[in-house]
Image 1 (tube, helix red, strand yellow):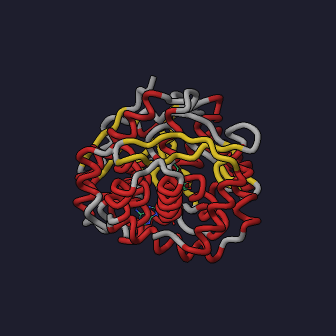
Image 2: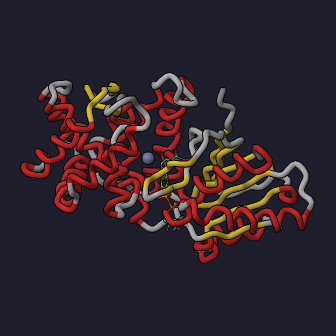
Amino acid sequence: VITTTVKFMNRFSAKDLDLKSCLLIFDRKLKNQAETKKVIAKFPLRYGVDGGERLKNIKGFPEHAEHILKILHAHNQKDLKIVVLGGGSVGDFAGFFASVLKRGTDLVLIPTTWLAAIDSAHGGKNGLNAGGFKNQIGSFYQPQSVYLVRDILLNQPDELMLDACGELFKIALISGGSLWKKVRKHNTFSALELWSFLPLAIRSKYQIVRQDPLEKRGYRQILNFGHTFGHIIESQLGVTHGRAVGQGLVFATEWSLNSGFLGPKQYEGIAQCPFYVDFSTQLKSSLKKLSAHKVRAGLQMDKKKSQKDELIFILPIRPGLCIRHKVKVKQVEKFFELQKKSGPL
Ligand SMILES: NC(=O)c1ccc[n+]([C@@H]2O[C@H](COP(=O)([O-])OP(=O)(O)OC[C@H]3O[C@@H](n4cnc5c(N)ncnc54)[C@H](O)[C@@H]3O)[C@@H](O)[C@H]2O)c1
Ligand SMILES: [Zn+2]
């Protein structure tokens, strides 16, 4: 059962938190912004990290853990809560830390990027990277609350907005309905528009997560739409998560068309979306830089989730309906070669 409370607020308010028993883990970059600087200053106990994919490297984890424990021991903490202020990387790192600290310590997330606000702060997944592959070490650990603070989110640079759009387009295509109708016509949003989409996008994610919180029944795998190939682009080419997922969505959609799951008419409705056109151009350039060898290595790591030489691909049938489909690693490699030659669209 998921008991996370999602709170929307215009300004950060600490009235529901006993600040003395909280340890804030925050992205140091946020000290330079007026809005987040004020939030950081409210917490007497805090630990700053450099947000970004490197934070998720498992090699750095023991040292962080020791530093944090030193802070905690000096304060003899009771009823401790870990509060996290940062993007998805800080959430994944600190979420994992909270899940193993004293075998589980209460967690509150305050996402500061659109990607984290729309997606990564919800659903209880965390993960560290190991051996050059993403999220190999992690747990399911639901935050007690997620605070979505308008004035923090509105202060982000525009480039972070583009990062979130891969996951927004994903959840919109998976859920269909009014979210899809809103998202399909755009390839950019104003910050206030994104803020106004948050409740619907988040509700759509919880609807899926709630049916399969621990990904035991397979249903939650639908949220991995775009991620199998996306993770290869992300880890091999250093593309940011959201943009890599956007490209992964195109790869899976082209596959769906090619293998007859997605009809030409439905395909057209998706492929004409401005976001799709942009991701597709980005995918073209990524494919040029990827070798079959790297793709195979990436697929092998993902493969672990299924048996033998098979992995689960999420394929769109129409907006509002995606299916899980078993594919062979060899088939994906072959399709990669095909796409590399001819390219999507
Ligand atoms: N756990 C999940 O369910 C889940 C889901 C999706 C993505 N993720 C993970 O999330 C990560 C990507 O998320 P992200 O893009 O938020 O990561 P991030 O934390 O790396 O943030 C991106 C960059 O923005 C900076 N930043 C953060 N807040 C800012 C602000 N308000 N203003 C200016 N700069 C700011 C960070 O320092 C960083 O350089 C990936 O590691 C991905 O694997 C996890
Ligand atoms: Zn993702």
